[in-house]
Image 1: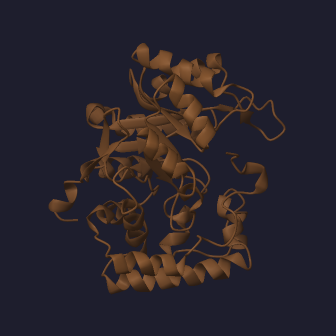
Image 2: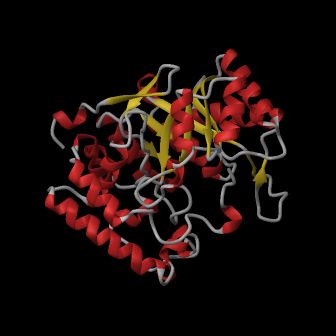
Length: 335
């Protein structure tokens, strides 16, 4: 990274005044979903991100399975620079173990307040910059959710209201009660479902968009192997995109993307992130990584310029996204 690279451009998310670095950092993989994490490595990666100009950091209650471990990790890492960063966390799950799957949904107003207080304590802060509903809870009217977060904002405990994996109708209903500043949903060259209905609505309403899994859960790094070769605690072991038939098609697409990236002297990860950034100035991806070196590559994508020809070639390689669903049917969000 050059000195110029540490001056990360900023983008405005929504119309309520939220401004962050053009590339953020998702911390989920530091404690769950991709095998056992390394606490010291996580701390080093988060702190390196801040050095590189990253200001937007994403965590959630779920990422510590109710223990607060992920939020605590992030809180410790940014303790000395808290006023220089934007911290986003999420509520919306029942992690009590009362459900057969181990956890279910719970966005009751009293639970939102309980989780928020826990998150404030785990993060070691007196305010949460962005508080998302992690998944829409069909048992709780979204108006009640928006109203509760609006109260937390009025109390100074939260600054901005966000939704995650919400569809157009839910977004409109929530926004009518309290302005939604940010929507977070999966989006990448591999996953394009938001383009048809969701992106037009958030842009109509002046809501910023935060793509998670912008590198296809690591498939777009090119460092992949078939699903059967991952341990059981790694979500790639059951993700459809890593299974026979889909895996080979997706690997072939990544090889073509890699050839395009190499022709421009960049990594395929940088190509994928630059593609997302080119989809609009209201988009800030939050790639996750445990590696400071990968982090530097990701942040550098903010300085990559893609030509119309590059964008057309990417569309030709992946006209509809990846082969295979992004989640098993039981986990698929419903819009």
